[in-house]
Image 1 (cartoon, one colour):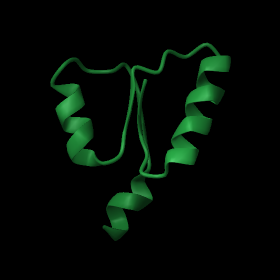
Image 2 (tube, rainbow, N blue to C red):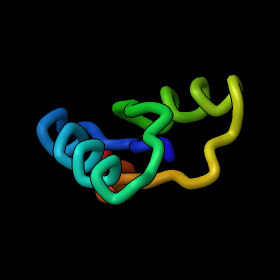
Image 3 (cartoon, rainbow, N blue to C red):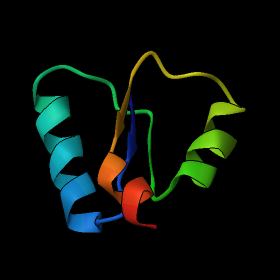
Image 4 (cartoon, rainbow, N blue to C red):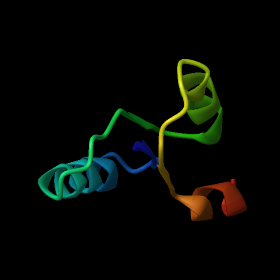
Length: 57
């Protein structure tokens, strides 16, 4: 799973929560451009995206 979240405290919390539930978090990025760059190295099975960031940026 790739987490796209601009709030560091939120992304750290999500990572811990997901790992406790058995998910593999392959990375955390802060914005869409970083997510696209990360996906060039391999597509994650799932992405958790903070969509509100994109709506107001």
